Length: 363
Image 1 (cartoon, helix red, strand yellow):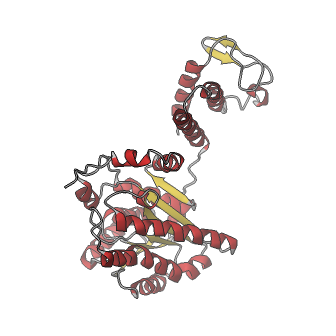
Image 2 (cartoon, helix red, strand yellow):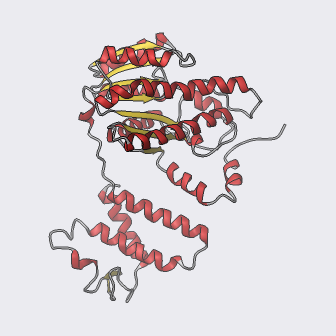
Image 3 (cartoon, one colour):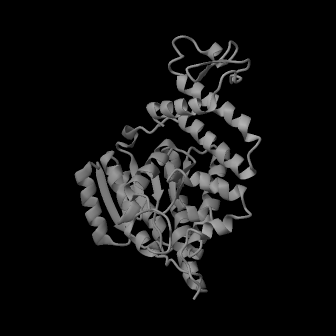
């Protein structure tokens, strides 16, 4: 949150919740001047020096608002308590959060990007190119890959190669990684983004299709990561896995697809713990995406889902930044993280709430 926005929020919040004689956040009582509480001695102003007071004025207002929040929290119902607490935590996190992403860190970085012929993968390729990375692109469609590669070169990529590959074939992942290491001389980032064609419909009992999709969306991810781990460890690299909200919350019309995304979450979250325990210097970033405005996603969900799709270019940039800063999980849009938290906290009515976002009439 930018400082001016935070300051405006904090001032408005303070004006709403303060009154004459209200106890100040740090103890004692304060007096009201111009509608604002001036805390008494012993409050938070005691630990602010004259030079620091301006820098921390926003935090002081936030803490004042937080104290009022806890005063009124006792009279609220459980749902209201959780929602308000979530809001306060989100604001405080936004206040303290600092963007540590340095675009220059990607200059010359060696990136293997799968699913690069369209949608989010194509947008990631262009972002990496603008940052001056060395990129190897892979997807099924060779003609489209060649066009993406040419555009990456015009955008500033230091090197760009491509290799067509069908990830439904168990032999393809290792071949792709070997080709990438040969062309780039190693890997700093492995970005797993490809997915198999998945219809948006009720489960129809097609077990063979689910096996095929599991190979494309899950087993090939495992094989690619396994083949790349030695070179990633050597270069203190990052493993970036693009997943979905359907891998955190089971949604209708996505039975097979959701199963593959839950599998990704389970495998790569466990792998992250093992790498940390073994002190192997490889970061694992899981990217949880909502509905994105790719042509394929919009076509499948049109008239069936009451949600607004988010821009693919912004989602792609969020993924790249998360991988570069080595965070464990990133949610895009950001509010998906709170959605997942509420899903866990309120199991009783979540099915009705979830189904209200879908347009379905029984045949």
